[in-house]
Length: 289
Length: 337
Ligand SMILES: Cc1cc2nc3c(=O)[nH]c(=O)nc-3n(C[C@H](O)[C@H](O)[C@H](O)COP(=O)(O)OP(=O)(O)OC[C@H]3O[C@@H](n4cnc5c(N)ncnc54)[C@H](O)[C@@H]3O)c2cc1C
Ligand SMILES: Nc1ncnc2c1ncn2[C@@H]1O[C@H](COP(=O)(O)O)[C@@H](O)[C@H]1O
Image (cartoon, rainbow over all chains, first blue to last red; front, side):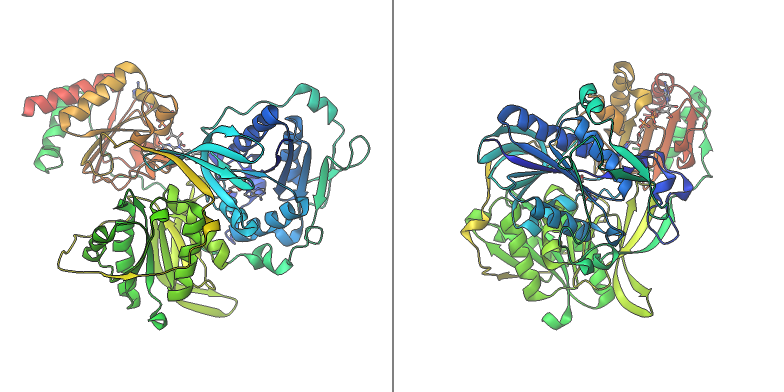
């Protein structure tokens, strides 16, 4: 029997294309101002889980915490063949830092129960913290292997993998249950399967009140409730005081946009004389020897 | 002792040798501790490294709590996190700093989770200051400053209610002070309770290559970007670095292309450098790259696009083709000598 696997995935704003109004005055992210994408390293985490299942069987459940619109990443996971997808969504989760996020995910994982392997991306590109994975592991009181870039072996009870460390790598082995965080070097994630896209084409996205978010899932007609579930604070039996803003010890005091200090660049003509002059100036100032 | 609420540094060691980032953090902790009128203390976990720990004193650390056990020679998450938590509960520091290294970023979140404290990742600056919220003022708390959102903003994060405040800090951003070998550190042997069931990771092999060059401490860095990402240009970049006695750096896409190894990468996800001279060859100057080199004393930018953002931070700008400009620089340098 193969391992029961859980993958946590996050929908993130595409921080590669950031505009001025991406941050709200209160220091939180204005997600509306940026396209939302599948966090890149979470696709790598998913890919590793799919590879393990191809080799040794087992099941894959993906979990995301986010606004209803985050169901989009769950669909992407279904298109790649996961068995079950869960959206953790509730206004009470809003404003969560890594501690509150990992707490909510831990509650959801406990509700899923019976897991051998948990895969997270190494880090999410909105915060670049890389903290949620290890914090889930701590809250579940299980072992963790971070920065995994290659799985060497997995069997019914253990996994052996390479993790990158400063200046090199190490080969580590852990029994189940264990949480892995996966880096972008691990693999080239697969594309959605056309067949599965057709299978799930009837998952509706319904518009709901815009103060919260735009899209909503409608687990109605054509697909079974088993495939996408939506849980709120109560469903995962979480303590509301430990969720969202109230469960977050870190606060944003101040946000500054990074501005270029344009100005005193000295134009050096691209001629031998110009460059001779530059080298001499740098020598006089003892910048070069 | 507990009443004083000191500043703690987690001392990272590889092969019994203290990691550079830990020494940088001791220096930074000293600066913060002086403002708060408290001491710098450290937690070291490992085996047979007592002599090495003396080094901490030279940078201003007054006490190191040392857990010596053979099974703890190499880092693994579970027991290290448990012991650090134990030490923090026992000695009640107000601030705990970790390197934003593979080890620091592995263990610090676990520690923060167990203590239910805030943790700010990958800080580039730390300060002591006040924070006001909901009619309450928190005095002299740790201000944790870090780039966020792909480096497009700089955020100041606080954890006002957390005791302690915790942060990981990137290697190379905190300046080392001159060591003073007349200063000594008190090494306190700690007997933390260690449970056999904590050893859940088996390390089969550790493979660390000595870096053949030292990007971080080189005084001259010549970096190749996508505008120099072809064999001919890269050859010229190397030649210029050799001629000037510097080392080769690069932007990330050059590393991604496989033409240079990761150790060359400068920037947010690479190395932070602050050399006397940084020559950016065919680098556009995106924020993630600038994050690792803006503090260079002099920056020369070579770029064929006069509007490239790199010119906004460069001291000298040369608009032109990499393959045309570099030979002139080599020639100029050789003519001078
Ligand atoms: C989370 C995150 C982390 C990142 N971390 C880093 C990091 O640590 N380091 C890093 O460098 N990047 C990092 N990046 C990538 C960064 O955003 C940029 O993509 C990268 O710095 C661009 O590299 P470049 O300037 O070499 O390439 P380009 O942006 O493609 O610029 C090439 C430049 O060369 C010029 N050029 C082209 N041909 C010539 C020629 N023949 N002669 C002269 N000039 C020429 C062009 O005008 C252009 O300005 C990161 C990105 C993300 C999202
Ligand atoms: N809201 C979330 N929902 C599901 N997974 C998450 C969420 N936030 C973080 N994660 C997981 O934790 C990893 C690290 O995130 P971070 O600590 O934010 O850098 C991500 O790559 C995801 O696998």
